[in-house]
Length: 177
Image (cartoon, rainbow, N blue to C red; front, side):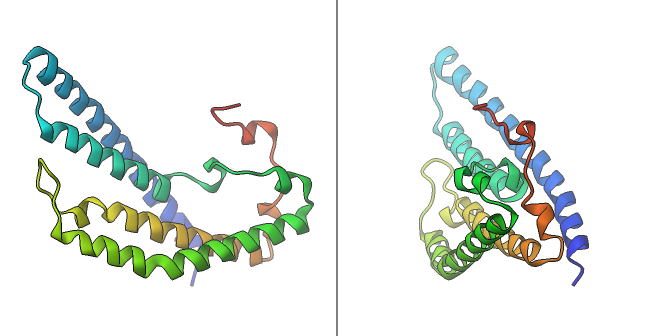
């Protein structure tokens, strides 16, 4: 199994997913403008537009989290991480990744079962099956498991120190500063 080649393919797939989710956000904006026009200019609101916006938002949110964002772009509580040395960080990373992989794997059949159960229900306006609407959650769930296992592999490899080193201040900043 060539892990670096798999990571490279995932990175290329992530670029495609980024364009897909950006297209979904553009679709949300276009549908929002249509909704405003229908509601306030034509005075004829349509439910399918609101429902489409909600479904696109749901899919774009979960696909972005699952396939686009990197570990560094995640919201983290890293006060203890920043105080530890490389060995402590490795231990925290291995423990967290193992727990996440284990818990998400153990709960995956329940998540799959519930989403599969939703085939009986449909959305109100478009009448789409809810198992299709919420399939994005299964994709997200599987991506969390894959990322946790990948993190375990990275921190178990000979190059683990590269993945726990200090980050520069500009690499840690986010929208909150």
